[in-house]
Amino acid sequence: MSARLYNRFREAFERDRRRPLVIAHRGDSFFAPENTLLAAGLGHRSGADAWEFDVQLTSDGIPVVIHDSSLRRTTDVATRFEGDPRADLDYQVSEFTLDELSRLDAGAWFVAGAGRPRTASSFGTLERLDREVIDATASGLVRIPTLEDALRTTIDLDWMANVEIKSAHDGDFLLVDTVIDVIRRLGATESVLVSSFDHAEVARVAAADPRIATGVLATTPLFRPWDYVREVVGADSYHLSATALGLGGAGYLRRRTVQSLRISDIAECRERGVPLLVYTVNESEYGKKAGHLAEAGVAGLFTDDPDSIIESFIPSAGHTRRHSRGIERRSASP
Image 1 (cartoon, helix red, strand yellow):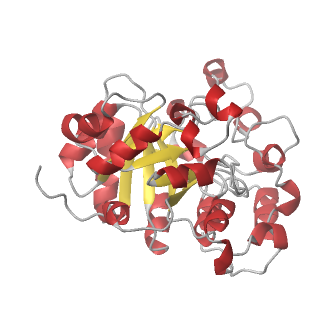
Image 2 (spheres, one colour; image 1 turned 120 degrees about the vertical axis):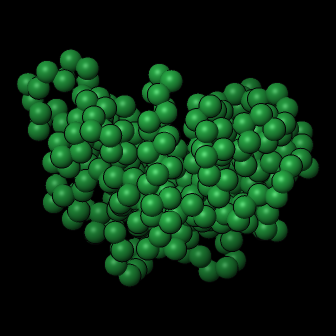
């Protein structure tokens, strides 16, 4: 295989590191509304190596940063567009224009009461939120970012971004091609990794612009992933769920040690030069999941709580859990 073009993710994967890459999943989503510029800013200040966010297309063809296909969970769309016939389709992102999305509050849901998924209450962080997050969510001014917003923030922070394409699985590559165009136009090819559960989309990105790093997402283990990822798809890395590596399985629950994981798969990926990244890992205490995965040799961890994961790897280096101790920090860029 020919030499791969320079990309900061590739360089980070090849570097001899004392810990896995830590990637802020949807930003620092323990302490800010997921997939917002506020979450990006906190994720960067946590010391995470990169952030990950999800991208979908609006009805007028603009890529925006949001995870769910519906706007209901993370915005006030049901109030703002009460009685709108698009409620019958559960307020799908793809049914709204960018102008309509720009009117939605994408922050207040995060500090709402218990019982809703991925809120500060559900994560147990409500009482430890930064003042800037409290003020921002109270203001009603937190917005759904466009892909351009997210990448400009990444560039301004001199950071890296994993862009996950939320495929519609309809054979239309419009989202993929639009994402590539935006990355190129902003000059972000060397700082971006594009991933998707739709591996045809990953292959399309890898072929269209070899400067962009790419990752194959999977919920269950692939057979000979080192061959599939590199030779079939032409991608750089393999992104697998934590449960697929044995975390949460019967063997791990009986004996919580690194030997209870699928360590042979991890070792083989390392030997074959295919970085294995694991999602989503939030247990950082000594002897817990993050430590076992690091010991097994994974290349990266996606986490909603990057600060705690990083601290678990370098407790002697003076890294302080800023959220739990209320340490004063510089103001956020985004």
